[in-house]
Length: 142
Image 1 (tube, rainbow, N blue to C red):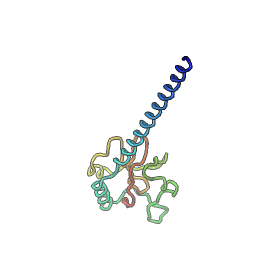
Image 2: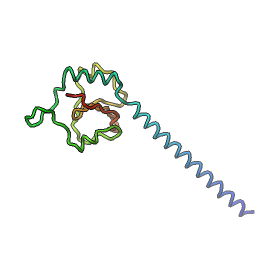
Image 3: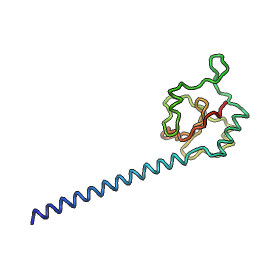
């Protein structure tokens, strides 16, 4: 009788542990989904894209650096430029420029916890807390 009670006790313990692990996996999967949804929801809208493109087409970018007398804007090194992609962290120590005040006034407020910056001629929407890039506009800054 003691042997049967011990076996039932062990089986119930195993069953309880597997249920807890399944619940933990479900919770982690929910967390990943909410993070993915957060990434997908924080992007430049069509209106923002249009306003930004028109602004830089009209005003240019006064802080664009020129390369050694060639008259062309200097780009980022290829390895760093390759890492300026959606879902990747902003490289540490990268020279980022803030938006011109006139452009900030034209755009709707950035989503909470995000900022818009200019890096190497690209417009980037980055999450402030994690420095994860959520959207990139290419060939907008002249």
